[in-house]
Amino acid sequence: MTGVETRIYVAVGEQPLDMAGIAARVAHPGAGSIATFAGTVRDNHAGKPVAYLEYEAYGPMASRTLSRIAEEAATTWELLGVAVEHRVGRLEIGETSVGLAIASAHRGESFAALRFMIDELKDRVPIWKRETGPDGSFWIEGPELIKAAPADNDPS
Image 1 (cartoon, rainbow, N blue to C red):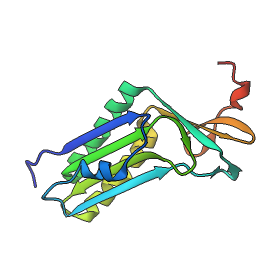
Image 2: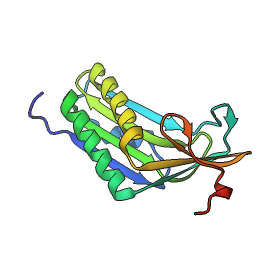
Image 3: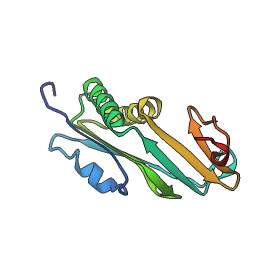
Image 4: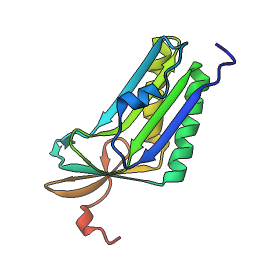
């Protein structure tokens, strides 16, 4: 498959995500696999209830970093298409916060690339999450760590 140009699409925005639309962005006649991943807002974290999430991003840098990660995945697994969208703003329980689609000739490459993409996104992309529940609002950083005091005590 060498020499095939990979279609890459990235977006960070406030609009609800359409997983079928994200998958359609990577459709390719040479694809034997289109794998998708949807990250959704759950109603709990670390044993505590969550009412909703708020995501903030440094948009231009987030888009550039997502593009770099997509290019790394495309090169590593010879992908035909990569699409990733991330929401910002307030998201309710059950809403999709991040959607990914990968097209490749074979499923193994698609699955491996999906795992790489979501792990690198969470590690490298300047998108921050604040959870709100009965105990207040907390910024979440790193592997499941609550790093901040309740937002109502935050002087910023």
